[in-house]
Length: 504
Image (cartoon, rainbow, N blue to C red; front, side):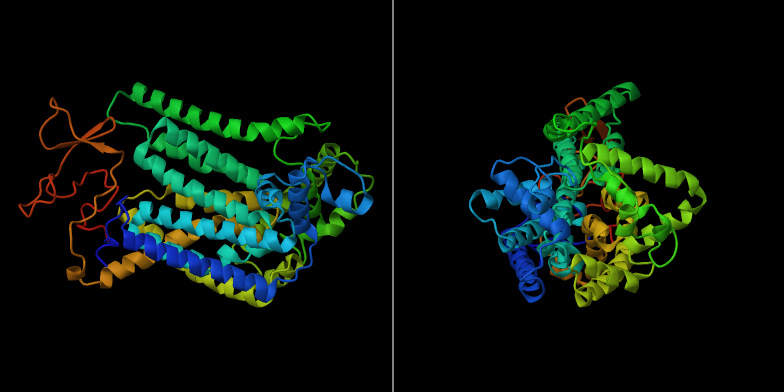
C-alpha cells in the first residue's frame, strides 16, 4: 500500500497509477450502484412534479423554445415565461437532448453519470484534504452511500447540487494551497454554479468563499498589504461569481415584470411552508400544498405571483414570530434525520423515494455523522483546513431554517459528511497499519501557502511560503530524503507537526 500513500500524512502528493486504477474501479462500482437503483426501483417512472419540470424544461431549451413553465405548456397549452427553478439542472440535461436523447429514461441515466462524476471530485478533495488513502475511502463511501445516489435517477436538482458542491470543495482546498487570482476566480465560478443549481446555495459565498479568502491572506508582509491582496482576491472571486450568474439574471430581467435574478420560486415555497399546518401538528417543519391552494387569486405572471406569495408569507410570519424557533428546530431536525425521522421517510414517498432505500440511507447517515464528528477532531488536531467541510453543512442548515425541512435538502451537504467520515476511517486505518508497510519517503505536508525556496538574502534553514518566511524546526539527524532531508514542519501546522505524524 505504500504507493497509495500514508494516511497519516495529508498533502497534495501526486497520485500513482495504482491510485488512479483503484479510483476507476470505485467509479465503476458507483455507476453500477446507481444504474441498479434506477432499473430496480425507478423504471418505468411516473413523471410528475419537479422531475417533469426539469425533464421538459431541458427538452424545450434544447429545441430553442427558451424557458417557459412546462406545466402550463403541457396542460393548458400556454407559453408562460418561468424561472421556478434555477437553470443549471435543466441546462445540463439539455446536453443529451441536443443529440436526440430526450426520453425520461435517457435523462435518468445522464443524471447517474453526473452523480458518478461527483464521486470523482469527492476523491480529489479527500486526497487534498487528508491524503491519498482518505481520497479513496471517501470515493468508496460516496459510491455506495445512498445519500449520494438516492436522488440521481429521480431527475432532481439535488444531483446537480451535489456535483457543484463537490467541485466547490475541491477548488476550496486547491485555493488554500495556491492562492492565486485564477484560483479565486474558479472558486467564484463554482459558487455561482452551486447557486444556479439551488438558489439557497448562494449562501456559500458568505459561509465558505469569503472567510476562506480572508483566512488565507498572506501574513509575511505588512498588515495593510496583506489585507489589500486579500480584498483583491475576494473581489476577483466575487466578480467571477457575478459574471457567471449574469447571463441568467439578465435573461430574467428582460421577461418578467418584477426583478428576478435566480428563481421565481421563493414565493411559492414560502406559501406552502408558512401556514398553520406547517407551524404545528404532524407537518411541523414540513410543507403542505393545501396552504398555497387556500390563497385566492394569485397572478399568472410568474414574477408578480412570486411577489404576491411572498407578501402573504411575510404577513403570516409577522403574526407568528413567537413560533419561529420551534419551527426552525423542526426544519433542521427533519433535514438531518433527527426529528420524526421515520415519519419523514413516509413523507419522502411523495417524491418517489422508496421506503426501504430511505431506511438504509437514514441508518447510513447516522453512522457517517458519528464518524464525521471524529473526522473533524482529526483534522483539528492535525491543524489542517476544516472550514470547507463545516461551511457546507452550516450553509445548508441555515437555508433549511428559512424554507422547510426534508431529507433531499441535505443532499448537497452529503459530500462534506462523506469526506469527514473518510478522514476518520483513514486515520483508524493508519493507527492499525504496521509502520513497516509504509515504505518509501514520507509525503510532504501541506503548508499554509505554496512553499518556495528562500532567496539568498533569507536566513538559512527557513521556508518561504508566499509572503511568509517561517524558520524550520530543528530535527534529529537521520536519512536524507531528496534534497531537503524530509518534510519541514512549521508552527502553523497545516499538516502533522508536534505529534509526529498527524494521527489522532
